[in-house]
Every structure is written in structure tokens, then in C-alpha cells.
Amino acid sequence: MHEKSFNRGQSYIRRLTHLDGAPLLNVLPQRTAKAADQLSETLSPEQKRAVQAVAVDITAAFMQTIKEHLPEAGILHHRFHISSYFNEAVHKVRCGEHKELMAQGDETHNGTPQLWLYHPENFSPQLMEQFSPLKDLQLKVASA
Image 1 (cartoon, rainbow, N blue to C red):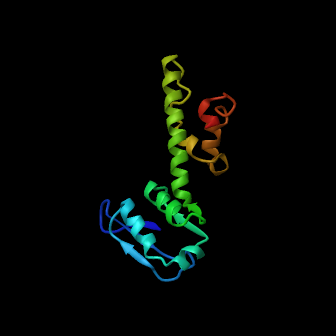
Image 2: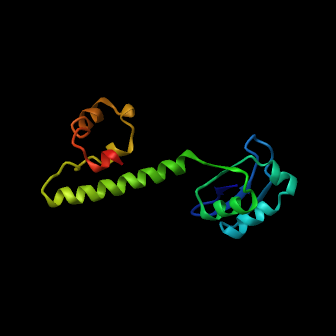
Image 3: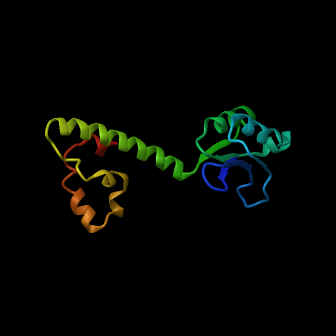
């Protein structure tokens, strides 16, 4: 189960496909729990038993449907969705810590937001030069 945007804006469909490139199994236009249930109900009992894993977005509707209709299936999430959750968490920690430090007159975090969202092995030499003094300051964001 996966959502796919189409047209412009926030228009999505729910689709049911094989991961191995087999043909599309089903498509529904809604982005609801009911649509996720309807997709699952298109599978026969034999097909449901054969499902080993399901790749889905991190959506409550999908998660609940899988737990109810495919309880033995493993759940896989796309790296993009996992990364976005981690990046949001790091951003919130950095913002909170920045606010605390600024209240004390400490501008350590000024100009550093992007530094905390990349792995240091992906830094350019200029970013590494900017990051190196920060990594030893025992900042909360470094732990995040």
C-alpha cells in the first residue's frame, strides 16, 4: 500500500502493488482508513496469508489496516519518511536549545541549522571547518 500524488497540489491515490514490479493490483482515490481497509479487502485469504511484508508510508490508517488484516506481515517504511521524522526531531531540539542559549547571550547555534541535518561524512571542507568546534561543546542537538 502506498500513496501516490497526481495532478497538482495535494491530490493522492492509494495503490496496492507488488514490490517485485508485478502489475498494479488496485487503486482507490481516497486517503482514509476506509480506503486502506478497502484495498486490503480486495485480497483473497490465500493472498493475505502469502504477504510477508508491506511497504507503507507512516500513516495511522495504513498501520491499523496492516495490523487488522495482515497481522503476520512485516512493516517496512520508506527511508524518506523515517529521515523526515528524525530531521524534525533534531530541528525541534536545536530550536529549543538555541532559544535557551540566546537567553544567556550565547550565539553558538547562529547559522548552524543545516549542519545538524547532515552526516559529517557528507560535509564539504567548509562545512566541516564550521562544524568541528561545535562537536566538542556537548550540545543537546549533537546528542539528538
